[in-house]
Length: 415
Ligand SMILES: C=C(O[C@H]1C=CC=C(C(=O)O)[C@@H]1O)C(=O)O
Image (cartoon, rainbow, N blue to C red):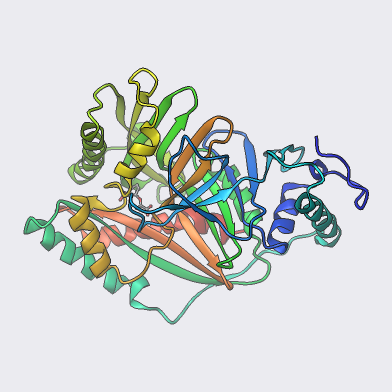
């Protein structure tokens, strides 16, 4: 329990999650709030350092925190790490948190400052929220231009036909302006209730003055202190909503050759990573159809008991081998990456990188940063990609990226 501070009449537990998040933003503290798939609690992690730390991604050695890596991260580089100074655990209603100040005293100056700011915020929060407005940005650059994307897909298909690579994941952006009524934390809450299957997260990066909000369906890897390692291959997409707005039943879903091959390339890539470390004892389940909001994907799960195979650093070793997987980059990795860098025409930044809690409640859970939006200066940049194979149709791939942008847009722009 955090004690009541004399300057304020309440304790940290008494403030709603939105109020604490507002206080974190006002104080310019790095913070992350997330909900794990199918769990019912929401975690808020705060760092008292103004900036993130760059660390070696040795998952088993790191203190509790939140890891964030861009798409262009390679295994020789350190990773951004938000050190956990305070962790709050909320029910889905946003109330009654458990508070863990880790190694700090309860009257640490930053905790007191946070409480004081939360007290101020609780008095200024308007009782009624106004629906935020979003509008398209007219000045389109080639990075979010349909023609640019379609031409890239056509170039990719010819490169595949010439044998330069087998698959590449091409992405685009979609930009919308938004007004002052948009509150990222409210959008986060809406996403958690609409997408129980997803890793829903909101990250505040005060040094960059930006936020990232997302509802990712894809686990990059998880490890638990009990020794369970998990990863998944997720690729192949089709709509989950029919033309009348109804949900298509899972048993009605049929997959074509293109999606089966696209997904198989990701599964093969994971198995190749296991082979590189001579790991043969893994459990493979799938492929199965899995719903991710407005979409269905093909998914195969992989699980290893790291204790049984005497491989305690499996999580850290696999992180370096897996990223970027064939679900976000392509096969073979190097030539797909070179094509993306030459053709895409924009920096993916944290989109299709990875993020998630490290060593919290005896587990590390890193997700691929998909179905994500970057929020800065009243500009929302949505990112979405599609796996291109020799059977790709450029118009269909564009429509797929539109649907992927809609996963967030439908929830947050209709608030
Ligand atoms: C690259 C994205 O999705 C990946 C994950 C699932 C399905 C995918 C696909 O069917 O192309 C992608 O590989 C994205 O959402 O931006």
